Image: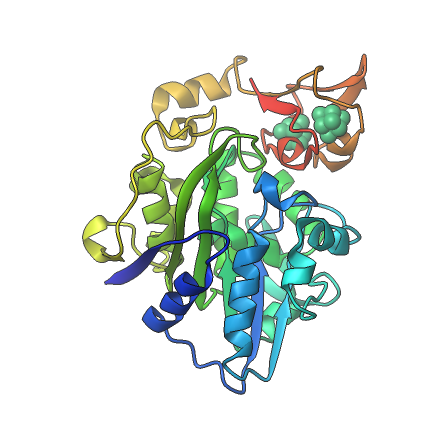
Length: 355
Ligand code: SF4
Ligand code: SF4
C-alpha cells in the first residue's frame, strides 16, 4: 500500500507540511549527502508559478539542515539545450536565495548510465544526484501539453543536463513515445521522497500557462506513481489512462489504483479544472482522437501575434528545426513538427499556444 499526504498549506507556512512529510516518510539524513531538486523549468518570476515556489524549497532546506546531513546540494537542469541559464533561472525565481548557499549547477558534472537502446543507449546524469545518499524531489502541480500533467515522475526529466533533453524529444518523435522516455529517465535514480508544491497550481496550457489555480496544499509521498495518481484524480483525470503511469506501473515503480493508495489528508475538489488542449485523451488511447492526431488537422503550436516579441527563443529551442520566423512571428512546418511543445514550454511571453 502506498501513502500520499495532502496537507493544507500557504507559502507563509510550508514548514508544518514539510515536518509532517518527514514524519510520515522518515529519512535517515544524519551524516548523509542530500540532493534536493525543485522543478525549475526556466527563468521566471515565482508568482508565475512555472517553477516550484521558493517558500517550499526554503522550508525543505531548513528542515534538512536541522537533521545533520554531511552535505546538501540544491539544483536542477533548466531548459532543453543550455547549460548557461542555470544560475539565471535560480536567481530570477528566488530559488537561489531559498537554497541558502547550497545551490550547485547540476549541469557541471555527469556520469554515463545505460538508458534504453530504443531511444539512446546511454545518457549523462547529474553527478550531484547520483552521488547523493538521499534524493528529494520537489515537483510542481501543473498541467503539461505533452504529458497532460507534470508531477513527480516528470520532474526527474531534469536529472539530464543540457541538450540530451531536446535530443530525446526528437528521438521519441511522438507524444506516446515521450511518455515512455520520461519513465526510462525516472528509473535511473528514483527519488527517496517527493514533496509537491500544490499551494498554487497551474491549469490549461501548461507547463507555462498564465492560468493559475489556488489549491492550498502540499502533497508528499515516497512513491511517485501514487502521488501522480492523486494529482491526476484532483485534475479530474483517470490516472489509469495516462501512458507514463501505465508504463511506470508495468515496470514495478508503483501503483495508481485507488485501493492501493492510502490518503493522509483530504483530497480537495477542483471543479472544472482545465486540462491542456489535447485534453489528455489524445495521448490516452482514444482511437478517434488518435486518428485526428495523425491526420492533417493535427494540433500544432501557433504564436499569438499580440503577445509574441519575435525573440526567437522558440526557434533556437525547437529540437527538429520546425520553426521559422515569418512576418515577425514563428511558424511551424507541419511536416517537420513532432508536437513536442518545447516551444510552448520555453516562450517567455506565453505566446505559443496549441491550436
Ligand atoms: S519564444 Fe515566444 S515570444 Fe519568442 S519568438 Fe517564440 S513565440 Fe515569439
Ligand atoms: S515547433 Fe514546437 S512543438 Fe513543433 S517540434 Fe518544434 S518545438 Fe516541438
